[in-house]
Image 1 (tube, helix red, strand yellow):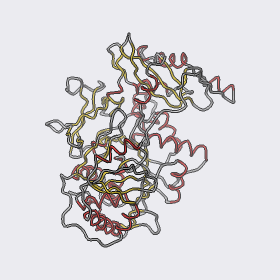
Image 2 (cartoon, rainbow, N blue to C red):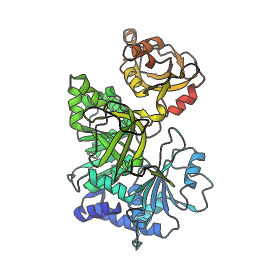
Image 3 (cartoon, one colour):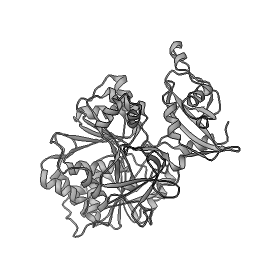
Image 4 (cartoon, rainbow, N blue to C red):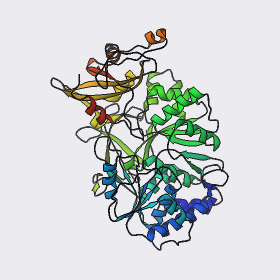
Length: 522
């Protein structure tokens, strides 16, 4: 199957429904299919095998996604926020083909000779011209989408997603035309993130109206939710935190919102508990997936969120920090260093297989002979089958031969009232191999004494001295906080204080930047 079949089915079954844009004056499913076919004809009139996009969310995204599928081209959205040298390198890997550019995109010069740039306006105009559908289009094993990984621990790799893998994910997790006519999904995750792609495909197959936010801003997100009566949305953890903070500060409400999924990074338990309290009528879903798995492979559903948050049982309440159960359409195991599955509660590497699992980069398949893909994520399954993630394997700190999970230490530090955000990293140590270093962002008004990012003393003055005393934190205090709750080997040998942690635009913590920043300090 070709992913364009999802749009063709929706247009056939609910052609008059609004597919894209405002409730009044938006594009219907029948019209979206017609414009995607015209886009396919336009792409077919140009040389090359790829349709690249350098833009935020706009109508160009679904037009290129489905138009490229109909034209037998690979859709390749790229982040316009990249620095010019990296952007030029990535674009050179996408030639030959066409490049559609948005208003905010700075196109590097010179472009590869066989990559032709066109402004977004040209594509939108072509979609309104009856160019004719090409005679042939992509088959199930052809490349549908190329997505560059975030590159948080190295150079970005071009993940290959084929039509059959994306279709398998959508059909396995979404019911055809299951959305009520009044439902609307807000897409605020950028198109070069797998969540942005899967949100469009899933919404189309469900028959749900799609509203796009070109770039994320918490205030603008809330305004669009209310103006467009949004019922469904997906965000990354950093987005959810900003939305919750904005709602608390502004006193605004989002009465139409019914379903909010989040994923793409670790969600601290205090943050989701705050969101659950603030939005009691919203169904929260934690979706864990990777670009290489065509999106979600495990889900903590809304019933589990409410049950675990209200539980007095510490074991059950801990499951609020899990990513739930694997989807029934995938197989998932935790494997040890010897490659064999481990028992419940034993940490190891998450490996997965299934029809939706791609596990492939340009010129390099990472699936083994039996179809298993090693995610490079560390985690464990508890005795009830809930999946807990503890970080990337590269993030594991090896101290004196003992493997330490940064996530475990971060979760403890986040329970301190003075800590707003934290990242735990391993840095070289002559005696132990690696030392544990906590990089802390303090809550507003919390004072601390310690090394700041530039090595100077950090001075956080609080307006209210009583509040400052109750929430004070310095290096010895936070070290003791961890020591009292975990084994001494997990206690940070250093605590650094910074104004903010480095995240990329899709919410991934850039630990390597912190390692580079603090390596050699102390």
